[in-house]
Image (tube, rainbow, N blue to C red):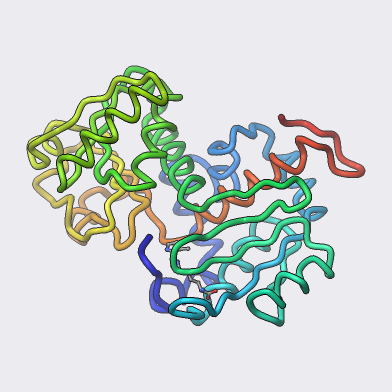
Length: 292
Ligand code: PYL
């Protein structure tokens, strides 16, 4: 997991409305809409109605490399933008968790250098940012492509996000090829997909040839300039959860509205929607338990 910097996130809060317009132009959905699709919630109107009744708290964490200036505030702003009642705790760390529970938060979000999680503690469930992010960017590519059934998709990067992307794309019945700078990681992922998911996926040895050969790409690497202008045709669609973004600035320009990327917002939206799914599976007072 790449550690974000203040520079990566400092404009996010001020640009959430613009970001919604960008996401709509790329996928046809807002930030909340992408989170909903990623989680399998199809009733966004209902989601908007219940969101204010699900209080969330964000706890700053000082462990490891410490607080990223603006991180917890930005996550809180994204949640509020989505329609949740959200607050950042005054205290950090364990005291912050105590404060969150005392204030009646149903979901508590916190990140250290290795893990960003949303705790639905009453349900005993945790939503992991890497998993939610992978699901959301797979859902995003699905929306961009108008469906992925039987379509060929290349996944670049075989870390935790790449692995979950394989799972999400197998559920969408896509034909998957995986590639990684370390070939053994890609081969290991294919073996895991066979053993754990009964899914058959291809492994590319030549990454350059694989990129040239695919129109639909999920870039789950954490490396810059993996996809460059000569890789882009008029049909190329790219969904890019990785940070830093693996698309070169000129390739980004050439893709125009055919690139889905942001550093934090889509992952947070998918986490929040998944938390709603978990909470509503048990039923929220005053709301029907609509999803299981
Ligand atoms: C959660 C993000 C998604 C991408 N990279 C991940 C990252 O930056 N992780 C580190 C987060 C540390 C937050 C810090 C704070 O301010 O509470 N402990």
